Each structure stands twice: as structure tokens, then as C-alpha cells.
Image (cartoon, rainbow, N blue to C red; front, side, top):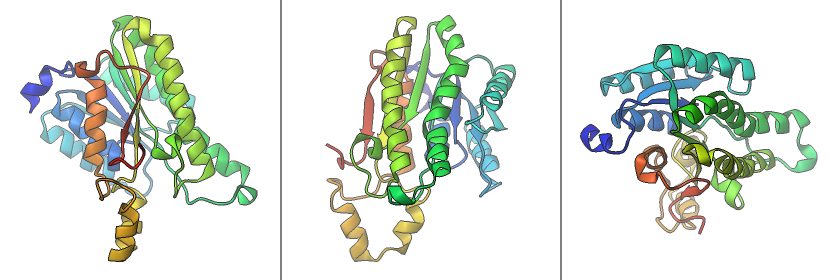
Length: 262
């Protein structure tokens, strides 16, 4: 697999994956490592302290260089320090996957606290801006770069389980993607987004496991492929957009949802 991936222009490049300790982020880190990238993971996982060590073991087992740092990607200083540490450890950053994000159970607008809105926008939208800003000068200078932003089906249409704040933030990611792609295109830097539907990670797993067989069937009925997606299926889309295979694709959104949004 590594030999074929070398033709994709990823071999030896430094990739940063935010929120890379679990779920889709971990899958992204793994497929990039399989493609020959040196991988840096930023995460702020307080729920599972072993998660960073587990992804480190997975990446290093593939023979790839790995770097981990505990980074709050909503904090500009923390992001700047984290990116500087990556450069010192691995080299200039060529690929950025803005994966960090999280949603909450939806509440009616009149019951929403302002702090909940601010937190969702910060993590799901502002963080992508901060991380992109911290790497873009190096990409411009190198005249090669790949930024892949993680949106959601909730940003493309209507998210049945999404909060207002999360949906607004993920829609904002799409606008940010288009505008930044236009700005940095002359420097051979591409910026794209991936919009997953229901993926078997995070909050989806316990909800799925708690459902009866009939409830699961109702959940998958609107999906033409009639199943929930897997993290690695999203990660392969990210890998494509980070590769030379997608060298003439920028400012676009790749839907990975089994046909749920068409």
C-alpha cells in the first residue's frame, strides 16, 4: 500500500490532524501514515487519556514518524506553539486536517445558553481558522499545501440530531473553505472540505448500541446504502483530497454519507 501511495505525493510530507486521538481523526492519522506521511496529532481528550498512546502505537507500527501534543485548538497561542513544536520535531507542515469538533444534543433556541453557542462555534469553526492561519505561510512559501476541513451533513442540509450551534458552525466551515481556497489557490495550496453523515464513532456508537433492531432499521432507512459509515471511509476521502490525485480540486466539499444527502 505504501508503494502505491508514494505516487500520490504524500510520502515524506508532514501532516497535522487535529482531534486525532479517536474516531475519524485517528482514522485520518492512520491512513496518512500508511501513505507515507509523518503524522502529528493535536488533541484535548480528557475522556480517554490512553487514546493518544493508542494512535501513536498504530502510526509507529506502520513505520511512520509520529508527534503528539496536547493542544486546545480554540486558543491561538496554544495552536501557534503546537505548530512550532511540529516544525521542530518533524519539519514544515504540508498537510492540515482540521478535524477537531464536537456536537451536543439539540435544544430549542429559547433554551440555548450563549456560552453553548460560543463554545460550538469556537471548536467547530474558529479552530479551523486558527490552525489554517498557523500553517498557511509555510505552504505558500513551499508552493504546495493541502488543507482539509471537516464539516458535516448538518452543514449541508438539516441535521436531525444536530444542535443549532453545531449546524451553524459546520455550515460556516463550508464558507471558510471556499473563501480560503480562492485566496491561496495562486500558491498551489488547495483547501477542501469533507462532510460526513452518520459515522460509527463518538456519540453515534452509544446511541446505535442502545437502539433496537427496528430502531436501527428506521435510522438507516433514509440512507441509500442502508448502513452507518465507518471512520476509515471518511479518512480515505481525506487522503484523496490531500494527495496529488486531487491536485486540481479546491474549494469543494466531498460528501461521505452513503447517499443520505443528495
